[in-house]
Image: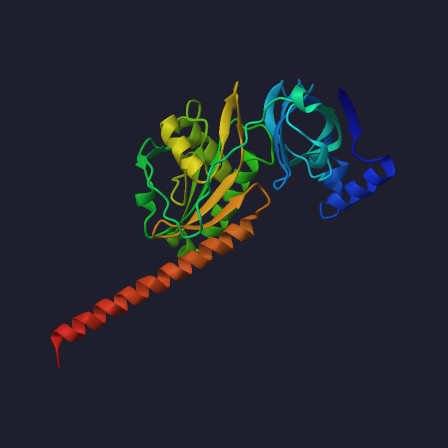
Length: 316
């Protein structure tokens, strides 16, 4: 037994879409390229407005694969279930993509595919981040210990990610932060950025060097002083990713993954964890500046304490 659920009559749907995209630039929604997408729901996250779909080939865009999509229509999640069929319009506009006009074909519970629900624990704010051993774009070992004394923003990407509002957006956001750091010597000396690939088999140091230099715009002149890229043993990358609650799985040449961006203090503790892709470069810059200012105060206090101790030893 199955039933087809159209989520809203046309007038209501038009009103809903108008509400959803009211904050977007009109030219983004009007000029977006649109493709018909058909597939099967693998899993979904109502809070993050994300659905993972095993979809058929999308002519003119991509081959059949399993990957996450943004679906902002909240009513869809009330009837959605793993194993349900979904037909929707995939809209792609610049760095953004989303699903529109979803039609869900809901099957009886005994016909639905079983979902794999992530039960990964996320660290609490203030919790110590475990050290890790990775390899950067220059083939040199890098770990959390190398960032001690500096604030660190860490995100996860892979270079072949096809959707503009996933890995490409994370890298564009980091590029914007990196550019602002270059204008602020105090911040540049107190903060660092690190992008870790979840596709270590393909993303070698050489691949990451090319990818990173293209995003900074420095190309052969890039020295990766503020922003590094890292790969490593698959089990080490997974250990680090899962520490922050990020789940991922390989599907052919693509990686099905969630999004996590962590801000880590100079003494190696979690300051903030961003889920999804709604955060902005300005948010991350504010976090790094807060931590950098705190590090400066701690350094000044330490110097003052050492001076006071020296004075006491010297005596009158």
